Length: 174
Image (cartoon, rainbow, N blue to C red):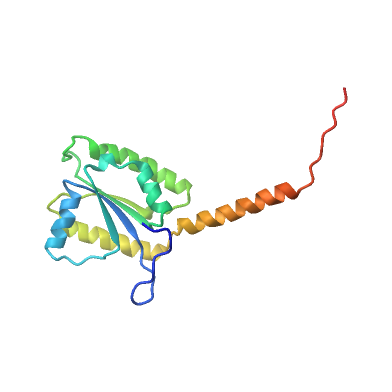
C-alpha cells in the first residue's frame, strides 16, 4: 500500500480503499467463486490471503489504517467450521479488542468489519464488499497518514513553544 491519498475515480470522485484479510479455506475461496462466476462488485478491495482469520495480528489492521486504508474487512469461516478448530473464535476476541482500540483512536466502527463467509457464499462476498464501499463512501476518507503529519506538526509547535518559554528556577534555602 502507498501512503499517499488515493487518486480520484474516473468521474473525479473519491472512492474508499479497503484492505481485506480473507481466510484461505472459506472467504478467499468464496471471493474466487465470485470472480469465476463473474459477479460484479466494487474493485476497491485489496485482498490479503491468510491461512486462518485467527492468524491475523491486530497490528496488521492498525498498520493497514496507518498506511492509508479507509476500511478493513476480515473474512473467516463460520463458527464451528474453522479448519483450525478455534481460529475464528480467536479472531472474534481480537475483533472486540480492536473495535475498542479504534474507537479510542477516533476511527468509526463501520471502518472495521468482520464477516463469516463460507466457500460457497460468493454472493455474500459481493454484497458485503458493495455494502462496505457504500458505507465508507458516506463516511469519507480516513486519511490517517495526513492526520499523523498534522499531529507531528502540532507536537513540533508545542515543543518549540515549551523551549521558548522562560524557565523559572526554584531557589532552595538551606
